[in-house]
Image 1 (cartoon, rainbow, N blue to C red):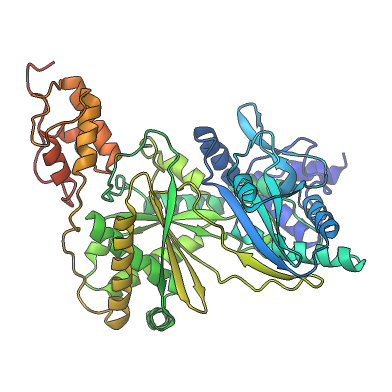
Image 2 (image 1 turned 180 degrees about the vertical axis):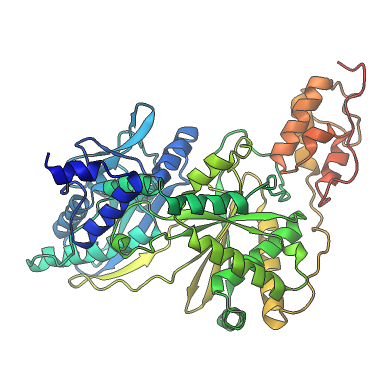
Length: 550
């Protein structure tokens, strides 16, 4: 070991992180400079979270990332196989698995090998997409090819989110087109070297987190999220299942071009961005339907402010939690100004991984719920056109159907020529389709009102009536061991006792997102419990466990 290498290894972690970035700018890696040992790289913070979630729900598809492209023209299947193999050879993360070493996940990179490209039916391709991954063993990429006719095929790629993010998909698509074109035409592909690889990014991230800049960012998040509210009380139609995985479903609405343009003009007048307007509308909607005053919403940020990371494939994106109190704002314009400040502050500190923030805050982790936030909102960039590939027209396709839900409710918006397409992905185990459709209609109406008169007073009518009585009666019946219960019958008269009352309070509090159930005790009857679900704030005490009942 040379004196220079020895000196570099003795640097404090934050200084090693800075040295890595300087090496990357010169096209060099930390390994070439002797910074790294021969062992596997640690998992990134995002990968740590993926392993944790996977162990809780190994069969869930919530974190599968499906990509599908229609290929129109004369397809050279051998050239496509070659291009896929080259893609995986270039990017080590595509052949990485995440086994545990000493209780912590590490990145184990497999040797480069051809990617199996299965010729399959559409049904078989859907099955490939939903088949569970084994994060510890890999591979975390699957490919399928559906032949439609002589001049039409659909290429399907399914990744686990532990190895890609939305930005990565764009990088991979462009490189796959170039590699395929090079294979068909017999020329060398024109692509930049991959520096850094994702394993070194994870090493850099761990080192950077030990520095003063990361410490300042963490202090910001701990202050921003101090004393977080409990779970958002969205009115659910059914009790929450015990397990962490929830079936997903999607309801879409389209804000037409004129309305989209009016909202963009509002953003410009207020010095905001279209995403800030979208988030403000979403938080006002959530305040209306839940009655909550303090609302936490997660959003995905690309987290690639450093130019050295623009060509990196891997899970680099980060979720930041944006806090809003729409009921404190007199008008939508006033609330948008507050949202703007919140977003700008969050963007400044977006490199602090959510996993680190959650670990430091240590919020309660109710079973089957995401800590801190249960709803998300993201405005995705407009997809760039994919260049032709040696006589093929490549058209990205939206995935069919919905995966398992990551959160109770997510709003994903994409701008296009036909307007702003807003997809409400929801946990179908909790919410009825008609309920979510109603929320989407309210969201559209809010958008029109905000665009027409952002200085009008915000109205806070009570949440719409929500009939949860059938589901609540079923909870009563399940715990009491009865086939059915009278909605007005007293819980204790039906055979309930103190232990069952506590279990009932826990089931209702978790299943229907109502804070305060455990503190207040069990409701007197199923009808009273369902009525309380319609109240934005619990104002009346529920029945406490009576003395002498066992």
